[in-house]
Image 1 (cartoon, rainbow, N blue to C red):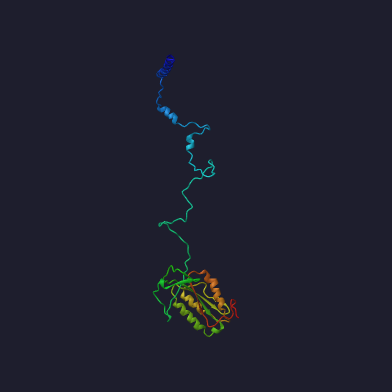
Image 2: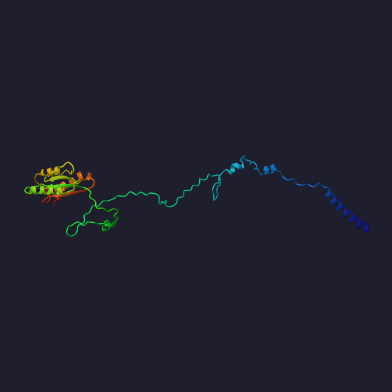
Length: 257
């Protein structure tokens, strides 16, 4: 029995020794350090099966994928302009707005009929259709007038015609040197005695003395003709002055009810 146990122990010891000797006699493998060439070869990208290199892939712009967007779909280039609100205008920019300037000539008199001088913009307020308007500019100006002087030469003025002529000449002499006047006489006919408005005082006096009496009074027709045929083509300040002693009797533009 002792021999059997001894043999078993000796067998186990021999097996252990055999493994130890085998481990000592086996050549040891030591990993060699990789050279720089091998590292470069490992770092280089491997060719893709479809022939496309990684460098060509990296040249494409990055695309954010989201939702059901097709990754192969070309994305529009991003721009810095956005649909924001109205564009802000800096202090150095110039903004031009086209407006219509309406000129309103006025004359201010007191209760005694005397002109009031030295008025300012703050002394005036203007309304249009119930809405107050801004007075953008105010100045005392001496712009020239274009005056149409209409002289009644109807039958009723036959014995007063010379007085009417003297009054018309006195009126012309009171105008400024650059004011222009046209002379028109009317009875049953309308006569324009000056071809165009003029500031020649001698020519105006001669035209006034040429007025002759007639029949009828076409007052409204004379005013209508001056406005539509002459004043429509004249710029600036305009006025119509009537010298008459009666009412209209034969105008085509008048209604007699």
